[in-house]
Image 1 (tube, rainbow, N blue to C red):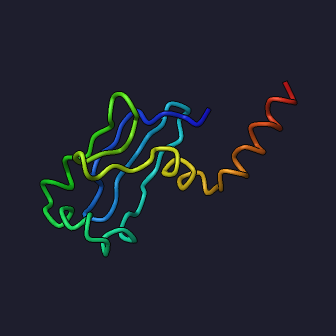
Image 2: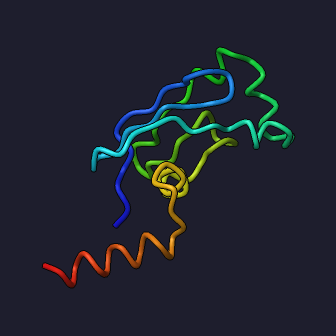
Image 3: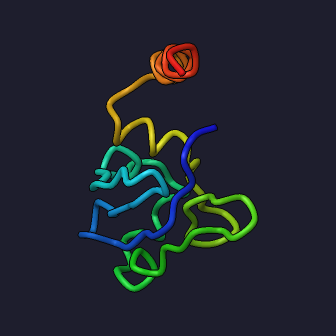
Length: 96
């Protein structure tokens, strides 16, 4: 199972800081999303700063229209693809 996010906060206009329950933490640059119309709301700094973690799904969210997958953000922080992460998990499990 991929780690769950514990805290999130807006770091700058184009990035957020995250920490996960396995200790993984870092800054995610979201500037690659700004050109998409749904993210236009992020131009409002107060809105961007309102980022939270959904208590049920653990999604990183701003409102009902803007949510990011916590698993994808975790893998981005780790610099791994899902396949690499899965392989690492299987290797770790077989070594125990």
